Image: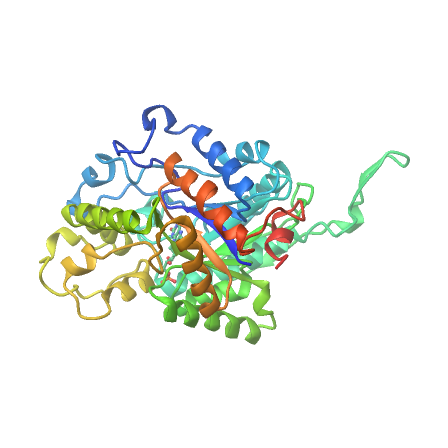
Length: 429
Ligand SMILES: Cc1cc2nc3c(=O)[nH]c(=O)nc-3n(C[C@H](O)[C@H](O)[C@H](O)COP(=O)(O)O)c2cc1C
C-alpha cells in the first residue's frame, strides 16, 4: 500500500482562470467551497492529506513587471491557514497541511498558531516548513534581502527546535480539568522554554492548551543536501520532485540513510513524489490528451519562464531561448530544483518546453495509471504519490472516482482510516 496526497501548487489560490474545465473561478475565488468539495472527495477516496503551498510574493522578476503574475491569474494566493479549520469542519479524517516560511514567522507565533489549528482540526493539522526563496519575500517581512540558501536551513533547524521547545512547555498531564478540586491546569507541570539560539530566542510557556497531536505533522520539501538533512532531522513526511524512477529511488534511499544516521527509522518519514497523471477513457485518448497538453505548453512558454524567474530571482525573459541554460551559480532560490532542470546540456527552450511537474509520466486509463504507479513504487521502495494536478472539479473527479478506486481494487491504497489523528494515520503503514 502507498500513501496519497494532493499538492495545491498555488495554495489557496486561483486555478485554471478562463480554462476549459475550470468551472466558476469568478465565484470560487477566495471562497472555501471548491476546497471543501475537494477535501470531502479525497477523504472518501482514502487520501492521507491535502497540502497547501504558500508564498507571500507577487512576483515581478519576469520582464520586471507584475503582468505575468496577475494577467493570467496564476500566482495569486490567499493565506491557506484560516481555510484549514473550515475544511476540518466538513471532513473527519483527511490530514490538512499548510505552509509556513520558517524564515519569517517568529517561533512563538507559529507554535501558538499551530497548536490552535490542531485543536480546531481535531488533531489533523500539519505544517509544511519552507525557507522561502525570493528577495521580495524577505523584503515583505522587513529584511533588505533574503538570507543565503544554506544559512536559511541552519536558521530553520534552530527555528524548529525553538517551536518544539514551546510545544513541550506543558508536560503531559498538566491539563487537569478537575471539577472536584477546581483545578483547570497544574502550574507545577508548566515551564518556560527559555530557548536561546543563534537566531531565535523565546521565553514561553505557551498560553494554549496542548493540541490533540501536541506536535503537528511536519512536512518538508527541500531537495538540496541542506534541505534533505533538515527533512531527515524533523519531518514526518517529505514531498519530493525529482525526475525519473532512479532519481526517486536515490532520494528515498538517501533520506533513509540520513534518518538512520540521526537515530530515526526510515519508516518514521513518508516520502511522497509529485505526479500529474493524464487520464482518459482509453489509453489512446490519454496519450492524445498528453500530446495536446504538451503542444499547448510549447505554444506558451511564458508561464514556465515566469515560474523559473520566480524560483531563481533571475529574469528569464532576458536569455536566448535557443542558447544554453544560463549560469545559475547566483541562484539563491530553489537550488536543487533548478539544478536538476539544468542537467543534460539542453537549450532553455527545450528545458522550458519539457518542464513538467511529475517525477514520472503517468498516462492512461485509471487502471493503467494504477498499474504504472505500482511498478514505480515497487522499484522506489516507498512511500507514495502527491498529485499536483490543478484542482479543477474535473481533475478531482478523475482522481477520486477513477484512480483511487483502481488503486483500492489492487489493495494499493487505504480503504478507510483507523485513527482520528493525522500522524497516526500517516504512520499506520
Ligand atoms: C512539492 C514541493 C512543494 C513545495 N512547496 C513550497 C511552498 O509551499 N513554498 C515555498 O516557498 N517553497 C516550496 N517548495 C520549495 C522547497 O521548499 C525548496 O525550496 C525547493 O524544493 C528546492 O529545494 P532546496 O532549496 O533544498 O534546493 C516546494 C517544493 C516542492 C518540491
